[in-house]
Amino acid sequence: MSGIRIAPSVISADFGNLRDDLKRVEDAGADILHVDIMDGHFVPNITFGPDIVAKIKSLTKLPLDVHLMISRPREYVVRFIEAGAANITFHIESEDSPSVTISEIATFDCKVGISVKPKTPLSAVRDHLGQIDRLLIMTVEPGFGGQKFMPGMMPKVEQAVEWRSQGKYDYDIEVDGGLDPHTTVAAVQAGAEVIVAGTAVFGKPDLAGKSDLAAAIKSLRDAAAYAIYQKQFPEAYETKEEPRVERI
Image (cartoon, rainbow, N blue to C red; front, side, top):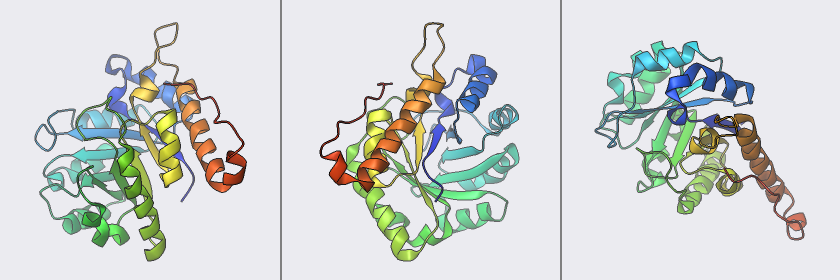
């Protein structure tokens, strides 16, 4: 694994100024762009399709982490790969065979991820852990931004870390939903490595009316660094105040 990565969720960007937002988030040091695809069936909301993903790709050098919250991911895998996805994550709860979907994505030069909803036990994905590059653990119910982080999902993250070690697997662990500088501490302490954040990155305007993306991403990185320090040196933490991170 290659350290903590911050993945701003494009769904929270200003689509009227998308070019500017994507440039600013790239300049601010984001590692990945997370792109949520919703079909109005698997989740009660609709976002956009491959054409918009291709447009996003044309506006950034960052890798696109495409999260398919759709019932039949196999029908769209090729189109999203052609649109520029570096990683495609689909849900274990979708209607398609997980093994077949993984195999089809892996046929292309594209990484494969599986996601689990909060009510789905992590055991549902265990048989596929040796075949994937990313495990996305939802920390809210998928479908809408701005929800509260569910700390009860942290045991899943810890279990994912344990199973990875036991099986000598190579997936990274991503969390998505309600992540801000404070909840990021809990997520990283549990073992998360990819932090998806939408509102916490794009949702706080500065005096000019634009989100201060650099400050937002720095706050998330500071929180992650503190969580790692806390895990590595718990005895120091006992006498050390939690760093002040800006509430986003």
